Image 1 (cartoon, rainbow, N blue to C red):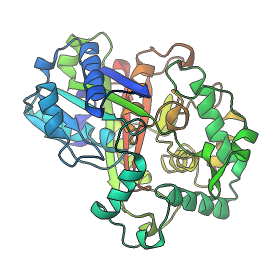
Image 2 (image 1 turned 60 degrees about the horizontal axis):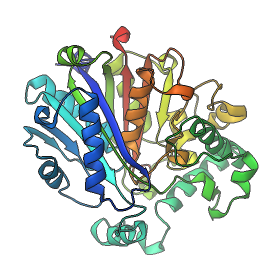
Image 3 (image 1 turned 90 degrees about the horizontal axis):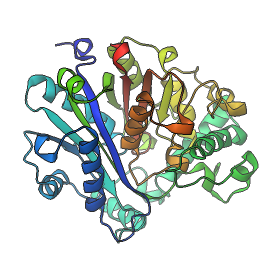
Image 4 (image 1 turned 180 degrees about the horizontal axis):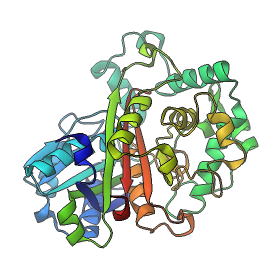
Length: 390
């Protein structure tokens, strides 16, 4: 079977989240369980119906095992591939293949983290990674990872294309404007270009407002074969295209700091879907830092290389702009519990089902969700659509 033949053969039938912001008193596993139960219920199923599991965590190498144990699952399909924040979009393809082969009938994709309130802090995790995930060409220089790497990419983009700090700030302001329409978002206070520029500088040229939130949070979604999905829920959301690409682990190994593997994952996902960027109604991009959004807009084909700064100016990706991007508020203003990719899928599904209230994109039929992992290391793109797009 070709990838084009796999187009639309699987659908997302349920989504759920829990512990957004601060989940004080709960463990990562507990809020993961809450999100999983919400997604399974949203699909009109019970945990007894789940026979496939895809999950991973930056804090545990065998995370799928305790997740299966905690949820009482005995899955016939398991994927625990860990690619950083893109993992949960990358999980789509192996899950689709498992469903199509008949290996399983319903796959739960889930994630949970209490990086803000948990006892294992982000600093402790960073210190541990220096031992278990050494970066031999970078760690000797004691960078503030991942921030230093993204600041390096931002500096190069500014040098090569004349991108300005004001244009980077446009990304943060647009995310905040979307978040103000989302009652679930963590940060909803007004934010201006000047606020971003005058915020504390953390790694030139990025201020603290150019950086994602540090929150708790859990998310989950359920995949089924399309024929079963249509009978299960009123509006399944179909996976039209999906691809993952990895070109490097360390940012110092990138051939070009302004071109990421999203240029490959996006191209392959669009080819599978038989669509182009101009067909997409709503976009979700992994905005761990403001430079991410600019790089991915270019690499995924929404504008030419070097033109994303101008593309986002004057509210270009904010409510009412030319392209709705990160409509939940993104990692910059909604939620970011360490790995954000699963929330991109959740928001895309909710937009296509018309469930987003004040931030709803009118007549949304096709959505793109793009995940990033490491320091511009792993890239995974998913294109989702409603039944009319099949």
